[in-house]
Length: 226
Length: 386
Ligand SMILES: Nc1ncnc2c1ncn2[C@@H]1O[C@H](COP(=O)(O)OP(=O)(O)OP(=O)(O)O)[C@@H](O)[C@H]1O
Ligand SMILES: [Mg+2]
Image (cartoon, rainbow over all chains, first blue to last red; front, side, top):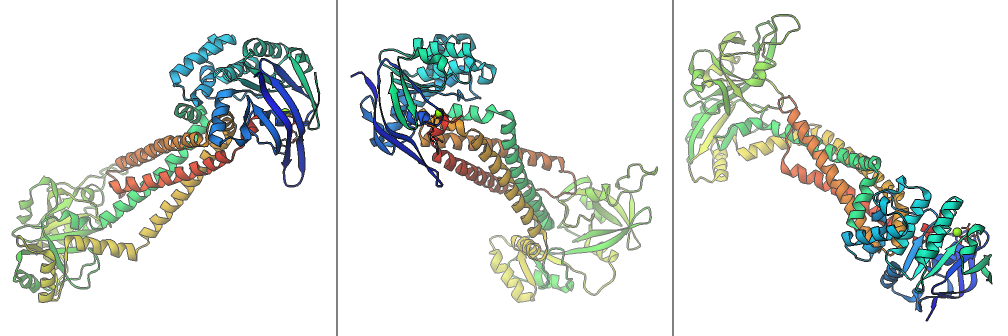
């Protein structure tokens, strides 16, 4: 089986009390293993909502979302947490590193959540930092690193536990062109392999060329996949 | 995860200090104020505590506390001595007399008259002189705090240091000569007046002449006597009040609790300290969690369970609480140490540590609780919001 994510008729409505916003309106999407899928579209069209559902941190109202053949909606919350901890890596626009941990400690976090001992996790973290070109900065704290470097630490964190799906929300939009390019290269070269899928939400037309496929969204729908 | 929790807590030094200071303040107030309170209360019956030998105090039935002296007729002493189960009974004079100092000013003093032959009721510690010297004519023993403060002689040069009263110096008590033959260490009493010890007969000669002079009869029970039964027997035989030492302390303690504003004053300041401390510490800790909410969200998204996050927050509260408590109690102890020679009452029994420890725990648990609720309700999807 080489399907990583299968979404059918996904619907999600936010109800803030005063008004209801339909962020996802019958979304159908399939993402294959070994594929870098980019999700693009105007602001507010539902991109972040879609990857939140795919990553299992938000429940849909209707429709089906399967990850590697598993339906997260019907999982017990404990299994779901475990699944998330083992199978998914996150990269955020705002990096979201823990400011009081150094680079290696930050990268260790997913392993520690998975019950790996701290020193073992740290050794592995330094190894992965090496693969993103930051082996000599493993002691640095986030505040001592540039935006591009922080995002590379975040990518190392998303990779360290060898998840099968990596979700990235606007990974380059806080970065200048060169750093953004560097980050995308890393994601494509280091993060992507045949047993793993990448979903990247982006506004940034300059990085569209890195995608294997691009899904265009508008107003809660997927309007085109190319 | 414990390591991450601690790093999170201490990572931002400014905020960390804020939390710990809040808790330090709370524990300081919850320890120091009650310590002063306990000190005051203990002082109220320190005279009874200091007087270790007698088992039972006999006095007028209307006496409400130790300083409330209602004199008895001297003959009562012999009546008490005649009661079965009494090993010995000794007279004690306790009164307030005016001492005329070298510079002509007057000072109220607590005068204690001890049985002429046995000198029972003598001060617990003699720093200078001998107890037997009280038998020399006009001999008195003065307590060290009185000797160095209220009874001290004026400085030789204006503005200079006062000269403490020494062995060999003289005073006038009601126009009668008194010679200092010793200096004693006594536990400070409630009114912090100088304490003067002398023999019973001399104390009476100093005191203004009155029909009744005997303040208390101090009783030692025969070995194996049931003290309660003995007090009952004394009451029945003499019509006087008789209390064991502990009963007399309790009587004094409760009189002060009921008839003075002291407990309310301290209760209010301890209560306020608790509320202010809880507010400060709770607020800073909750703010700390709010500031880190995104970090908790990231951990949650990455698969950390509510249980793990709960433990992290509890650990953070525990660490901040222990350090704050330690510093608060430490500061209180330092305060007590710095004040050890001063007039301020201060007593730091272990029950107080339990009291303030419980207080700080309650504050921390409360702060952790509101933080935990926040984190458990947290939607991990917030991590994608920029
Ligand atoms: N927590 C929420 N509560 C209410 N409405 C929300 C919430 N999150 C998103 N929305 C609404 O849902 C719609 C889709 O939001 P979403 O964040 O998925 O868009 P997006 O495509 O990621 O936009 P952007 O490119 O600006 O990040 C928007 O109209 C947004 O206002
Ligand atoms: Mg978005």
